[in-house]
Amino acid sequence: MNQPRFYCREALSTGAHVELPEPVARHAVRVLRLPPGAEMTLFDGRGGEYPARIERIERDRVFAVLGEWRDIERESPFSVTLVQALQAGDKMDFTIQKAVELGVHHVVPVESRRSVLRLAGERAAKRVAHWQGVVASACEQCGRNQVPLVAPVEKLEHWLGRPSGKAVRLMLAPDGACSLAELPPASEVELLIGAEGGLDPQEMVAARQAGFVPVRMGPRILRTETAGLAAIAVMQAMWGDLKGG
Image 1 (cartoon, rainbow, N blue to C red):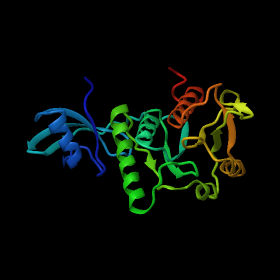
Image 2: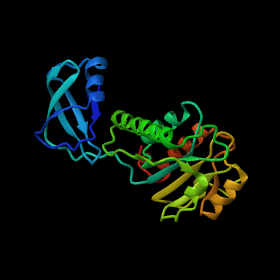
Image 3: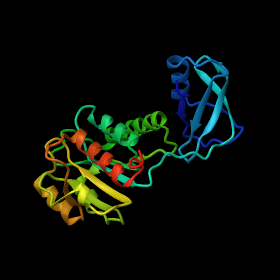
Image 4: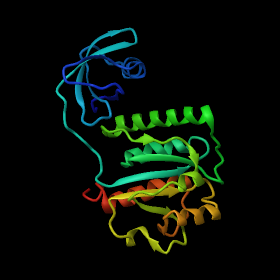
């Protein structure tokens, strides 16, 4: 069994005696039933990780001592930002979790015209906070020590109006002029994925005007919760850290 890994938002340091955050402590005690003296790994998202040992347990409060910082990273040299149109049900949770496991560096949830889910105000902020928790849990599971950020929800048309950076911009389209495999190597990509039913025709036009290149990926039409993950896996195999096996 792999050693438990936990994310702590507060800055950690070698030799520190810390109280684990309440959700982490609850999971360690109630779910994993870790006893005093149990070993674990802690990380704060700032890079690297710390071996740790439980000093004592007071009901649901867990106190640990940290060992020497370890300069260990599992980040891909290929940087991908997933610009994902809001999905219904628990599809967003699934997509974000698996995208983090596949090495995505940033997640931008956007509301498109065909998005069934609509979020605004406090409800949107709570959902983003929830997704950030999904990201942290995925990092705990897959071994990443740097935690990708989930951007605030905004309308796709507003996001497309922002100035673009140096990243190559791609969106999946069955009638794309080229395939992913035909693209030249890239080190940084922004990948736009539509909601159920894909992007609206006007959104496709706006995305092209914003520099997004339509590309195809195989002969089949993929669901929104499959498309982005499949594309990220393919690009990681071509340009990232999955190509080495």
